[in-house]
Image (tube, rainbow, N blue to C red):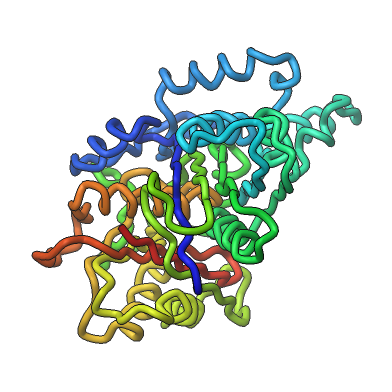
Length: 384
């Protein structure tokens, strides 16, 4: 990149909460925030938002009659986008783009309307408009009264980092100087859980750490789904109020061998990390927030890719999925959030079941990875 991009606001909601202090305090504890939850007729591991936060979401949904029929994924995006716009000190007079995506989309409403159709052979009037993927950014734009471009997309689990890529591209093109990017996911539904179980990747653990993301000794897959949303405000150049900077971006896609495949050495990650680090010596990278979904192949292939790129200079490795679950389309930016918090607090968050030494030096640059079904990898270099 020939110019830095400033991150001037960051807002999220997840099982860790929604305020900066609450989220960081929860990161400082070694406790997982995954718990058993009744979803449909099954009791499964899940990472859900708190009852208090859920009440706030309900209040938002009830504040406007038009919002009552929206899926949670859309309401989550509206909630965090309001917070980010306030933090960035943007107003309705500012022209800014919006790109917020989702892997699964309005899955709760889709399941509801499909069940209704199976029984009655009819559906409600709002079934189509409230389940289309374009719901998210368009409703956020409506809520924020934005007049800039608005884009929605789904690129599986790397969706929110692809939003970031798109925002960077728009800013560097000169077509706009501000962009709100992110991802939102409300996947704790019976059909979504059943799909993950059908792939034999969902956790069956019965201990304090249901999701053993980056536990290299695990004998079976331990992925757990979480709900959440995260957005960041991007502005061109080095702003005085920047929380952090985007210094490099990388992306790549593998040739498919299977619908959910990734190569043993994660060639897509090797290419995306190499691209993101094009202008940065590898020894300057202090940490990597890994995708590490808690599956055997997903965790090990990413580690193999990191070793291919960094050799004997592998940085500190971490992930948040053992604590917050896999939030699909929102996961990449929740990883960026962890990176920014570690930069701001100058403290690295360790994985409970992966031993490594912390370097005794200031934390200045962190690489963030995400990949989805189909091997569409993204790597983002964040700096202090």
